[in-house]
Length: 293
Image 1 (cartoon, rainbow, N blue to C red):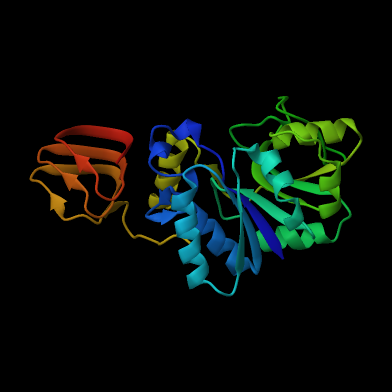
Image 2 (cartoon, one colour):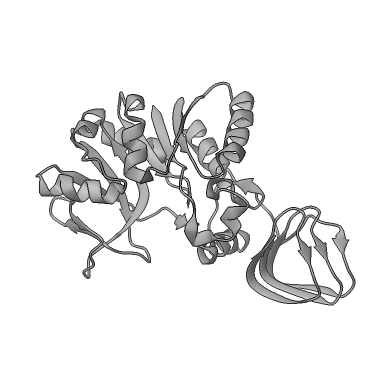
């Protein structure tokens, strides 16, 4: 089995944090989200994984080199982009990689979805494209409820669903891809040409696109308050994870927090629903619902 992780984007919704760190390296409880995805794919039996890179690519390439060294049982194939090609252009640029059915996942998707089961089920069909949908907060994919075929994207009705950022495509369909940067625009054009895109509707898995600070914080909250569990993420008994020892007097933690190593917190400070990255310096005050770096 093989997979491809779309990892090249600038992460503009996460500015200014993505000026410092590319979105795939954003840590979830200290573990980069792309490492979580790679571990999930590895544990599911995927042996070959393609990854495209562009924004702050040297940081991402350094991480991927170390990951490959530590996990020789899988092969990583990197596709560097000289300019940002988008989700559609990134796949077209790496078309040589897609020699067999391939699972594609966005690098900002935190999930406990069963990749192996999805891949197995799709291998039994002749459908050129299978996309994962669920009832979420961005329900804008309309399907035919009788056939589970996608009718349109980025439109809403009472039965529309959210695209999980996960799909399986068969190699021959890439030959039909019009050159567009946006994968959804490609899919819309394929539908207009009569090519079938099949929906796999998932009701039992957790999906969170961490591409906004709100969602990034919410993902931590869901894990620390034990609303969801992902086996590739460390389990903590309590919702207050304090790794730093550089904490002043009269510092109060509320609700949940994740305080990374070497974080400095001045005295007389209150933090609630706060994440810090390694080396953050927190001045005295009250902080709530925020990422501090």
